[in-house]
Length: 265
Image (cartoon, rainbow, N blue to C red; front, top):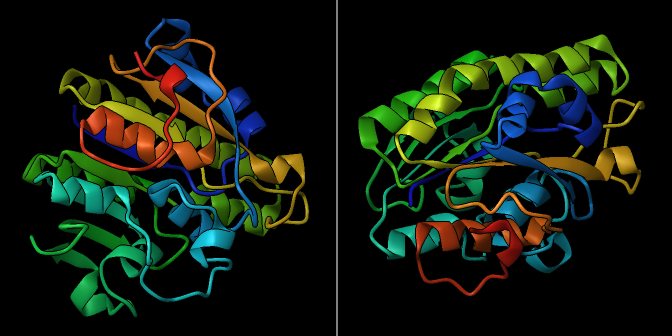
């Protein structure tokens, strides 16, 4: 089955539960389910992109802070998918390109990527934290329509950006979550109709100090929304390290990562 992974950077679990009315409506209608996930440590962005996409914790991967600007040494969903002959794509922050395609990121060369030999074959990568989520989702949908990827990563940044500017307990932060929910309401139905299995999650949360990185619940508790026929919608306790393997299971490709059996139908 084809899959889309949406990583809403910096989205705290409680805010996702309270502010994302469209996703919650889909869950209430029996078309999805929200789980609470605890992110790995440190609760920082680049280490947790690596964790989500490879199933490896930061202290093992060596990607332990945001400025470890080297290629990953681990095998990611993109690598497994390419080895299985599947098509990959991503609309994401440029650190994802640096982890799995090329580093350092060279915007004129790497911002728009279409190269069959790379782990992420088709990509639109941005480097401004204020790059509008509306544009990023349009970038992703353009990739989906143009290349029909088997695995598509969508990674917007505006929620995290608002958290760093204003903090967790602010209307600015909550309203960016509502904006992302509204954008998803324009796309999710079409993705599901096209047969995609969709996961919406976050790398980490946010605190009232306008930061993250530690062990506070508001920094570590993030949402995991699942939509599609591949999912059981039953009680489960998924781990962030199981997302890579779970997506590989859905894609029906060989892998050696842990996965959450209870999530799957």
